[in-house]
Image 1 (tube, one colour):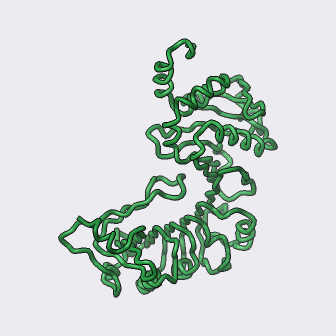
Image 2: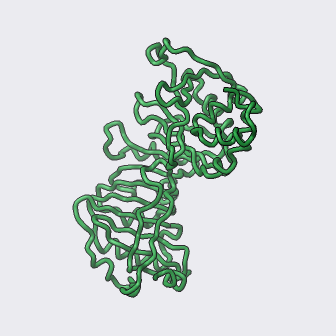
Length: 357
């Protein structure tokens, strides 16, 4: 079918019903086709907030590119390193495309028909850079790109690219080699998201970029929640703990209220592996309550890292809240099963109370 023979309205209707992966493939036909797709899909492309490069977490998984949390959340590209003949599927011929001035070998996925790009390991960096430059030109300039993988040596340094890394040893236990991780973080940009399991966050220096990650998912095997919260400078924290103390959470709320800790915090969730947090937390000194006859507003935010399973933080609908003295900002507080949830509003107490119905 030759798309150019149809009126512009019909062309738009056809393009509107193609998946993003299909539009991407079609864009390689010619410069005019690429220009047509970009002009007709402006609104659609502007609705894409993130594109994720998800590197394989084992040597048997291939890195993929996908758009998270969309009605058609399918892969748009897959990267295949050609290390041996078996991986090259030689019974299926390549086709070659010019991507940002670099000629590359492609095949279509046999079932989902998105592009699979084949390259030698030594070309990995230049291949990803060329693909990334094509994306920057093809999609809307408001798109944020996130690179997600297990902690390895290769990290591309590309425009508009945020890093979301998991730090897991080969046995999937807790991190013990803190020195190497500390040195790696020191030489890298501040991470958008970090996933880690360890004994004691005190092993990191107070100035470490460990505490500067925008969002962190952390499993703690010892009672070190106060240490972490004392130094954390990010926006979102998801903690799983084996040991804890109710006084630690009360102390955190008091220090947040005074403006001593976590001034940039937007959301905190502390899940206890074995016990449930007692409801007495919601009656601690300084915790306020919305009138029981009113329905409180629901606190939820987009998650910082779009690699995670859910697009938003856990909703908090609670009559309990605390107020920060320094700026009169409010944080909703709730106990949900085994989790203590703390959500900070960009509202004063007066504005917050007006939202209750």
